[in-house]
Length: 278
Ligand code: ADP
Image 1 (spheres, protein in one colour):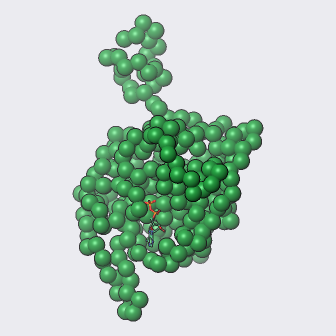
Image 2 (spheres, helix red, strand yellow):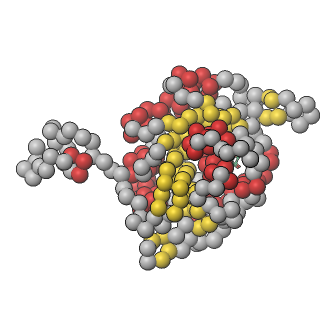
Image 3 (cartoon, rainbow, N blue to C red):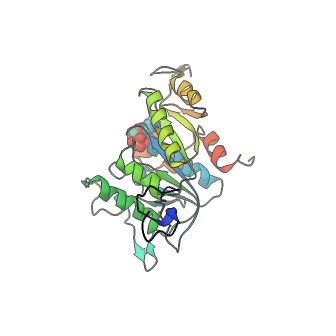
């Protein structure tokens, strides 16, 4: 025990044998910000549609009348601004950094909104990236009921620092059936358990394609693997999303807010409560 022991382990960084509580690394948000719930969207690797799911959830929540933000923590693959057609630069005032608003009124912050040229690669090492993501939380003047965090893929040091510094109310796991789904789910579950963060459920992306001639679902990468992996961990498979050329086009053209698909409504229900009948 340190000589200056205050018996409050939560504020103490000393690694002593008398520690009774883990030290909290959670950071407070900007004092001028208002943030309701915070949900992280995670995946095992890049390219499985994590940003697509984050964007769609934000759009669905916004359509339910909430004020919504997206914190793009996927620093080396920041695809969120492009999907929303946002190319302006984030500005600041005396209170801190201001998020940029999309046409539909979603607040967003991303490293791409800070670069001189959005095609510049981000050649930073893990600790620097982790620091930037933390600043997106501590410095940005959010005013949202619900903040979605597009997490860095995998379970590396950047993901870890985001998990540790942001007070996540829950995470959504995105997997696609062409990866080793059971391992991806298991890793995400272990990470969430270690951080004491509830898992809302699993989304399977790229589950099938719809035959343009007969409308039949074709499960390109096999069926049932994600559901089995979710079940093995007591989780719900909340949604299955097809490979849909229209989705890819909307994201490419920066028009994701024109989305018509409602595959992720069950995820929005799980987070926000059931939608009111239209
Ligand atoms: P991640 O965030 O996991 O790296 P993205 O969300 O950026 O992945 O998706 C990778 C690419 O695949 C993007 O071009 C995106 O528009 C496209 N994509 C993702 N999900 C779908 C889908 N269900 N149908 C069609 N295209 C998709």
